[in-house]
Amino acid sequence: LALAFALAAAWALAQRGVGRPAEGGEPYLRAGYPQGKAAAEEAGGRARVHVLMMGMDSIPHSDIWKAFFERAPPESFSFFIHCKEEQKCKDSVESGGLAPFAQVVPTVSNEWCEDLVSPMLQLLKYALAKEPSVGYPVDKYAFVSTMHLPVKPFGFLSEELARRPDESDMCIHQTEWWEPLKNDSTKFAVACFQWSIFSRKDALTLREKWPEPSATTKAIAPPVEGHPDEDFQFKHCIDEMAIFRSIYGLAHVPRNYTGVVNISINGFGTLQYPLLSNQGRCVYFGIDGQPDDVEHKATVDNCEQAQAALALQRTPDASVLSPPTHCGGTPIVYCEEIWTIDALGPNGQRFLRESKYLFARKFEPTASLPNYASVVFA
Image 1 (cartoon, rainbow, N blue to C red):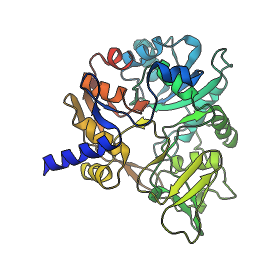
Image 2 (image 1 turned 180 degrees about the vertical axis):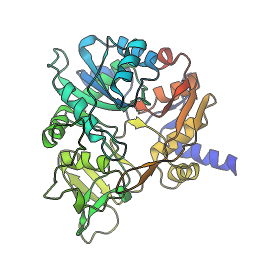
Image 3 (image 1 turned 135 degrees about the vertical axis):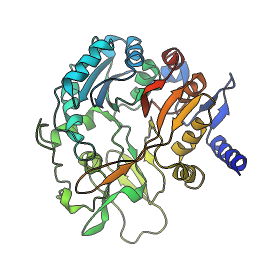
């Protein structure tokens, strides 16, 4: 049965361009992102990338982040960090050799599943204040946690993001996560992963619509189309539900729809409803859910990220750990189950390097990642 499942999953991955052997025989993913020098020339420009990191009290894998930024021209990036314990992060930046690249911003109100918007706003405040950079006509704002790592060289990231100068890379949850209004089931707050890459236009929109972040007071989402938070039937983390709707408004689903309908979101594009898998522009790799859930998503729901997750698990030198359950939030209690990467050798590193993804998580702080920079950033 296990062999049959593995073969079925491998076949499904192959149909999507995932898991075929590269020239060197290593597993890889190819899912629609152009690769190589020709793609860079076609892009016709570069983006200045503002890496906006959120964490607790330290920056794990500082050597990898240092190698990532050392390969980038100084004017092509900024790196701002918000931590729950500001001074400890400053000490970590110094001891990890990141001081030439990173700035730790003052800590503001923050609580998982209740208010992670305030740290995002604080990071955007500092990044948006950066003067325009000659030679980098596009600015992009990439949110990561201290358990993320880049899985592409900086140059590739800059050129890829320049291909979509006015678009944000935001990954939309399956529609069962969307939050309807209590009194109108045709209007939804679209559920979006917090880890996103914003265009400058969308970053400015978010900053302008929300109040100044406070060190002591939780951020309150501004009403959208006249509807404050309390008008929604929240089942998930309120802060993650607020980002997409603050920028693009609500999704309006026809009252008497049949089958799957296309919903036009002004400024973002078209979303489908209902849909069992993620949609939008998903450029962050992560594995969430219990093992049976991941297998179901990969084989039944045809979820691309779950298929990639199973393929990574089967890479000989990858150690991926099943998740503990992490719960929080009030008045809604929400639990997440995100798998962690405990070890990744050259095969697993090349797997992510050749994928469609730009960043990946969750890497354990003590994860064994031998020669990561020389493999992934080459």
